Image 1: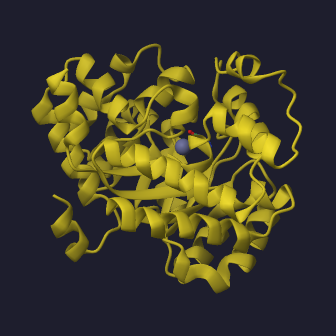
Image 2: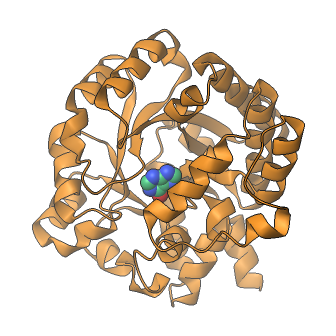
Length: 325
Ligand code: HPA
Ligand code: ZN
């Protein structure tokens, strides 16, 4: 228990967190009522019976369904503040947070409403908790590439309010190179580049995210471990992996968190970080992910090193990094 508190208190960055994945079932029900959105669940208990997932897609189905309750600027501010309060309790000093504009726009919302609501949450959260935050606009890879290009058109005038661009949703069958031109445009806007790869997809999708998208970090990336040459390249180039233990367990990427190649990757010199992905769906926030790895036999020292990697691998300025630790 004291070790658990020590793990929560380690100064850390959260680098892989979908703000929509922090929508707890209680808040989803409350917003459904507030916004007159009908959900196909009788009550909270009925909804809660739907949190067992067979794979990434079965999670995404519920995740996208519940997103429909987010309707107003205030909803996005409330969601962000609820997350930052949790993050603060887990020692998070810096949070680089994904959001899925294409889904909200498909639900009829304006890009600016979503972005302004989230930014307001970050502003209040910074005041309240001292957490630095930034937003990574994530492309839905199983929507048409044209939709991603259109998002870039919309987001161009707001590029200064964004930290980066990411790539998420159903991975297999939607390889990185489809989005080469989108990433080229994002780079020209001055955005940082990251992408989910090697979660359900093979090691080769990780290689292609590096070759064709020129990403600076890989989200998940656990299947890269199957390819020794690729692991050596990732280590040499200082590409951090944002591993999410409880997520990969609950989505049945691995049978047990102990089966994640975290130790192997660390030994090969890869900067591994630990993150929560979609904590409202996977049974825990970032501190719980550190605790889950401790239970597999990782020491407090090793986990403190991982926490340092997370701060280093963030896109914070050197001046900001100097005050986190
Ligand atoms: N993988 C892919 N898409 C996602 C995830 C994830 O872990 N979380 C939210 N969208
Ligand atoms: Zn993710």
